Length: 112
Length: 116
Image (tube, rainbow over all chains, first blue to last red; front, top):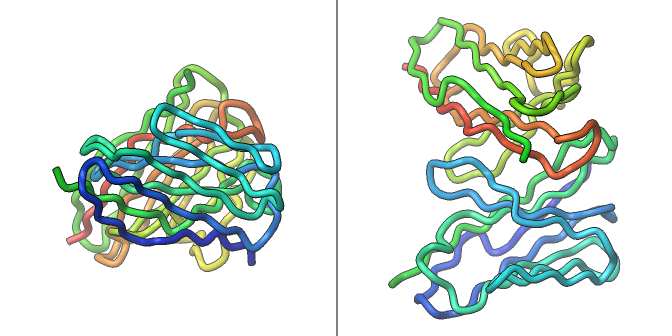
């Protein structure tokens, strides 16, 4: 079945260092979404990418969607302690009902 | 923006009892709602899709007789965990697209279920 794979599972960085998480889908996606989940919280929508090769920025966060629309990345420049949490990518399920298939998530720890 | 309210936030119940979790869309009508389950340090796994006015669609491996889903109105979906067991302890999260079939999803705050 459709799979969304995400690496790494965990990342520990020193505050100020950069961080990147990678997402790969087994199928071509119409769009890809990124969510952030703080410890004990629920996922919060960050961004949606739709176009092949699309790059979007939100302050220190840069999101990319691959040319083949099967992979994506999230890059954080100069991490801060507020960036701590688990970052999930998610792609639409094959049935086009609106459901999402989530990657395994990358948990980011930032040491001050 | 679109808001989804989920209740309760946490619940502790004894093994063998049933627990009902409510999910409401507060400022929009949701003909579809999604129920996810998240075990500690794991990803969100879709359990089922509730559809207003019709039966829920369950994902492979999810027992529909154990996880009863009802989408009673355009703003309310409920998940009942029947005859709960300790292995059902998890974080259950509902979500809904602001408009039918459109993303992104807006999530409820989640319900942390502990079965003793």
